[in-house]
Length: 491
Image 1 (tube, one colour):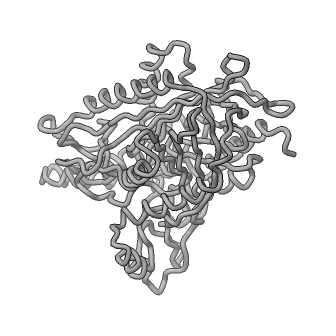
Image 2: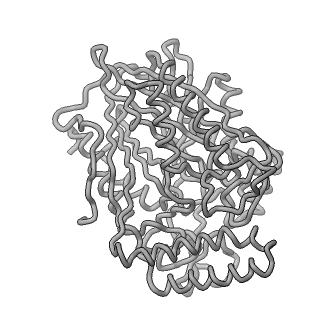
Image 3: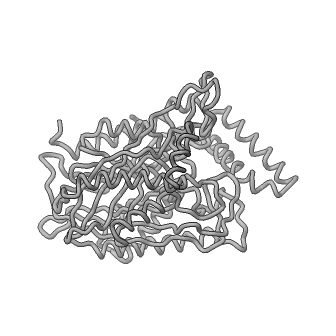
């Protein structure tokens, strides 16, 4: 625990003694269309894809919550869910700065931005991702500015629109995510690899089929927003050369048709670094049932999620609460970075050198090699930096909230499911929501378990992992500790 150094607690810890006090709840919502101008380079794969078409819109969905006690703010949270691969931390700071100019009274550290992790959304970091043409496509900086403007405007709108409302929470289940880490007889592992082999032994980790939900109503009991938190990245159509919000688009469309166009649907991804919507076995029988229903695979996923929402909604719809306890804590958590070994450095350096030779001989190979070359080059630089900084640290922004009986906690990574289960199992809250990819400093920032690191393969190798299992456990322990402080009445 010597690595765990709290740099700053940005909010006052309430509820240190006694039971949390309930406060009046204000809710505001807004949505922004963040679909890029076309054509645009989309991210999430190792090869260059220039999308000429947007098959669905991309949206940013905002819910602003404020608790008030005797006409004074007790606390606040502004949730922003975006149809993106990830949201760089510097872009979040850009948006916070813009919001502060319009709302100087707002504590912008309370803005929580998460990505749904669709692999068919625009690039947000120009350096080291792809060799993007200088002409004929939307440039990264152009899209970043467009996105920041749209989202900051939506946050301001949601905040200004907040009015008395009510909230409740629910839990249901849907089989959407499947564990994609495959363990073999020799102790190795693969990601999205074959299961129809004699050496297949098991899936490496847990499958989490919980669907945690929040429901928000206005003072007239009209449903205005919901959050849906499930352990599955939005990657059903991850390889397409198109802009696509993936399964969240049909989910939103179906729910708006049912509850009205005013409904704001936030997609939250729980700890799901080792999960996929793709079927890992029994695909033929699953497809047969889907074809009887005359549904595409995307619509089948949406059907399951919407059914889970309706099951929970029917159970809790009379439980709307206008007064709830609310405390929102934000702090910087320092994590030990995963140290690159000499063998990993040598392998990465060799790959970079070989790729440079291949690209020099045939520049056309750059579309296929450049991203993976830069991926390995980042590992080379990490190793070289150890000479001057042998114990590197990663500072992560951590949010932990109490909202009535439920806890909400965040992290910046593609967090393997086991960590999310550890948090939920130890949490004192009635129900605990884990949200991953709330900001990120790098594409592919997986946080694997000890078992995964031993098995190897993409998502567990050092190139795709800035933080190792030690850091993952620090996140779990600190999150559980902060949740515990917010539930002093639970022993």
